[in-house]
Image (cartoon, rainbow, N blue to C red; front, side):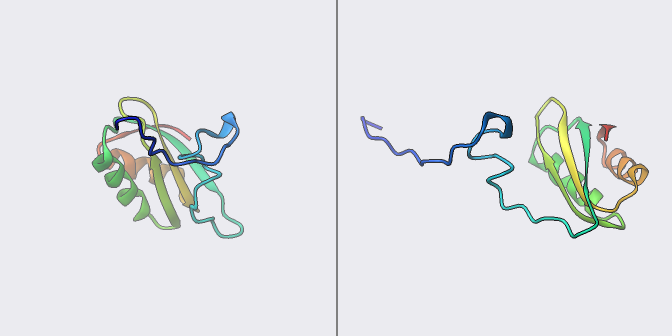
Amino acid sequence: MCGTENRTELPLVSAATGCGCCSTEASSAPSTAAGTSDAVFALEGLTCGHCVQTVEKAVSALEGVESASVDLVPGGRSRLIVGGKADDSAVREAVTSAGYTLISN
């Protein structure tokens, strides 16, 4: 870069919520409807964006699911966040049918 700075200023957030570029507070994720809550599950076996899309698609197809998103940790435990009212056993079945392992919720 020959001595020039081309960095983007990011908002500061507390260390507990992560960095400024990927903080959950800074994101504009859609909120869930009143009366519903997010369920969080730990997943193993995901290594790339294709894995993420496969799980999100499988879980989103379940009855009662309003949203499904995965926070990928390649080679580690990723996090699946399911918005809406979905049966835990149905989520487990969708994840395992997609070829991945649901650890807990």
